Length: 337
Ligand code: P6P
Image (cartoon, rainbow, N blue to C red; front, side, top):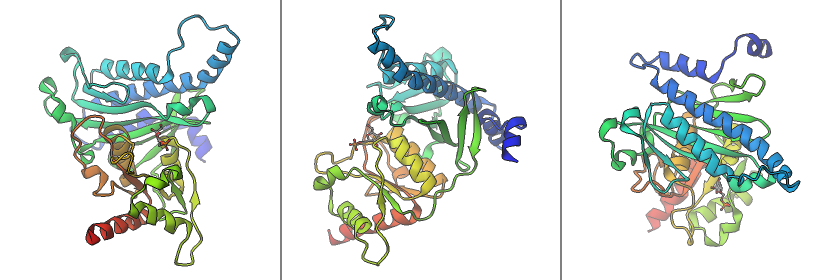
């Protein structure tokens, strides 16, 4: 059975990606090498996040080694930037932590652009809530003359996207464009092992996930949708509200259990809060690959063309039928003008 297979026929993430890549004739292993460096970054962050609590504890005991405890998100960013540059497979990087894009030394350039949030939800570290790394990968046509304009591509051009969630276990969820697979870190091996093959999100869910504290500022379609979740008119039972406040955790639950995750626009933030290149696009890519969908309130999220690297967008993503309901409410608003 699966357990035995795990013991002897180790389907590691590297082997799984090699299998997938071998199906496309012109692949020369560059993507697999890039991915192995992203995986290295995730393993480092996983161990640092696990120690964070302990380090804090030691800190309390006054035994810090004097070295200023670097904020985990800054440290994670440095690790990912160095891993991605040293892979020799990237030419430009966009990180949530860096105001400007990083153009790789021309001597070290490869054909990929990686957009990433090294430690999304890091404000939740001190209370032990799951946090995560989110990444999306684009191909760049001319790596030697890459400009910022080439980074500002619609999400539908992404070749791959994924997240790594640092929680009770470390789970990496990845799509390279032919479905979604989940891998769990086996610390004894230091390998990510395939544990969730071919993830498909339920067509309809019983959960909605939104920060109700922003309800005062929502627009009418969002308010109407949430009202329908709480007071269904068709005699069905109300949906459950689950909101962790860490995107990777809320999206992971939505992917596995179904339902819908919303970060809508509101009067205070007309473009919502979540960032297009390294939160909205990667999660939308995964949702579509898993049979769900993702909508901005105006259009399919992956059709959006960003104009700035830290641009924000409202997002409604999850089970196909649930997002259809939201799209219908926004279409009604557009019709009534
Ligand atoms: P709010 C975390 O800070 C984050 O960027 C996402 O991980 C999360 O989904 C969102 O913000 C939570 O925002 O306004 O509900 O606290």
